[in-house]
Length: 472
Image (cartoon, rainbow, N blue to C red; front, side, top):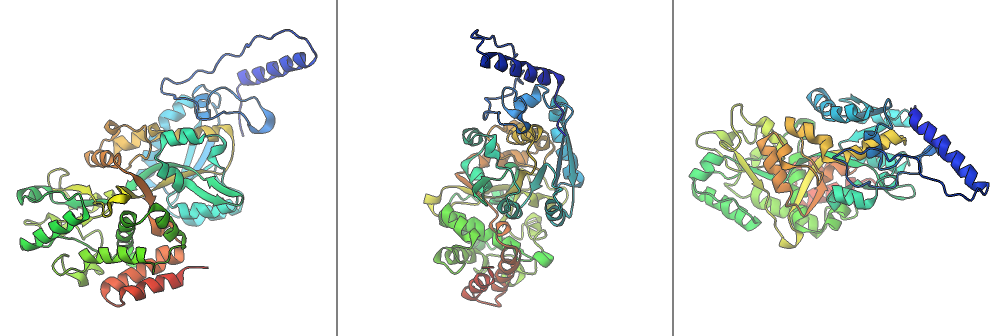
């Protein structure tokens, strides 16, 4: 329940009285007696007019974030849930503590390892928390279609949102509601996937150069092979999820070989897997995966090598393989004791067709709002700011999608350098398989890629099988 301060209640009564006098034809000019709300030294221009509160109560001045810092919502509670547990839950709670202390808003976060299973039950029962953290926009889209999610553009202007995010993030947050497009949430943190890791010390000793184009990447692979070594470390085994690393490769190549519009159509099922665009992406992937001498263990080993073990031969002396494409999380699978900047480094997975720029494949967390109260709006606005992640960036384990996040906030040197690379991004798109219907994105796409890589089926058959599985 919302708790208003006595000050605001008094001001509300005062303003009503003044309006009543004016309506009675008093004719005398009134003097503005309300003091402007205090704003934080870090507060920026109000993102949107903050009127229109439910219940007909007086709206304060400034944005909801500024009003929160002025103490207007002190003593209120905002409930949240999501997949942050264990260390991530600790980092999240630590990262919002400064905001809680400054505003008096208590953000009560309850993480769950069964989040995907429980959130649907809670929403269906009318027991949704105020804010829900979705690691997969596809699940969020289900609730948006049902009209369960508040459109953040009701209190955050598009101009402000464009100031805080690259347009791609806003595009990815815009989902179809029952009455049209809805800005279904605000992005909080993300993982960058478009990275190639390599053994830095050996790489430099060999005189190899960082490739900046696809042709240079192939030339580097040929050079390593000519030197008698194996260029690539690749593995896609992941238990019931075997095949997902192959889908990431496909998504990264799709972003580099066709338009964002086609990528979005592909994710929605409007561009079939059997289309020339998708088939070309697979063929370019095969240029690396299926070339003799390119992959450690050969093509046959790809499907049986655990994805977390795949980069390990890169750290042997001398390296058994030299290049590994994977997201920034993969460093947690690297052998104990290896040092960033010494034993390994990374570069951006190179562009292929110049006209499509330097896109990034990402995964991340989007905060969606289910209950509309002023203090909830204030917390949502807070999440649009880099400072909402500042503590987490210092602790490591997160990248910020916010334009106002500072590079020197990153405590991990690898993440700091990734953040610098991301600043050059021309576009972002979410992991496509995570957005596709479960039957495809976590089913036939994984399986068909595995069958194709294993040689069980040819490419045309694999793509046709995925198309046939799409729910219509």
